[in-house]
Image 1 (cartoon, rainbow, N blue to C red):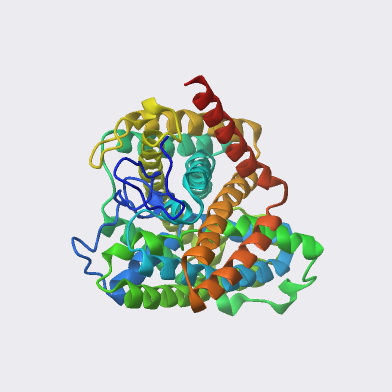
Image 2 (image 1 turned 90 degrees about the vertical axis):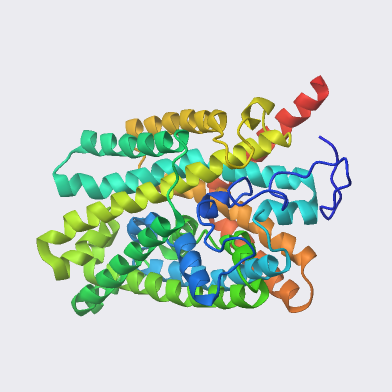
Length: 453
């Protein structure tokens, strides 16, 4: 592949890596799955602070939060609240860094844009691989979350839950092969539904909080808190969406920062409220029940809570799965077009076309990993931890790039975000082998291909 300039400036004969600002948000970029179906701003950018806040909430909130309170409580007990708070604190410099990058480089390229500008084509390719190959791991987790709420509500057993899992995945891949994508308004409606559910769960459950539920506070010690942080990162991905949406704002430097600050405030209240009420109401049950939100809503809605939450979980899971698959398939085609994946996968990389070959590869990998996960009974925890490790690596590249691309206060905030993200990466523990293996395999295959040519 022709070389690209250190800061991403390409000459007339050069090809930029996928997501370097020459493609649309749906076409490529490591965060494409989060934003590829939005396009609410229209030509020229018309988003203000209010609309931008709604879109960013849609990018950050996802169905993972329906299951994560249980996984965090299982890892750390009541001390999982500390992990939630720490990740919220980490989100402030990370979110502000991506907002600053989006204000300075307003386009849909995403983290790969910044990686290419700061570190060159190889780092941009590795960043793209991390996101692309995290999808076959993270998407089954989203489907299993939806199935985990449906199965108890309908009285289904393990086989029924597995059928719902595969059904959600099959429907999402079929919709993408047909070229169907959820409109931005539908995605925002699903995010609003999740917000309402979280608020209702917290408000109705607060009177039932018992102080005794918080003792012993840290039964698994500091190590448990670190393990909880490693899996909880799944609920905090999406801040890179600020950079993807930047071109949609009428004034990115002003409106994007305001929308990011408001999103941080809303997410902080929702997540901390949910963490406290799950522990305070359910006690030890928080670590054993895979459907904590349904149990919280039962405090106020009674027997209707289970079916209502199950329907909402299916809609939210399908929305997230559909969006990840849509953007991931386009990212794969763009990476292939630029030499970072096998060339045959590039078919359909042109905006407006369906990348069927990339979709087929994702479907095959997703189906295989889902079959292994369901057949072995390994559950959500390892899937979400492996996905979190890959996405944390993507975030680390983005904020590290900001230390080279920004100046003044923006650079200092980016340095803090980089330090925090590296600490979070360390909390992923052995799951860091997943992004390391992806990077090593990709670079080895790439070198082998060049040698053959």
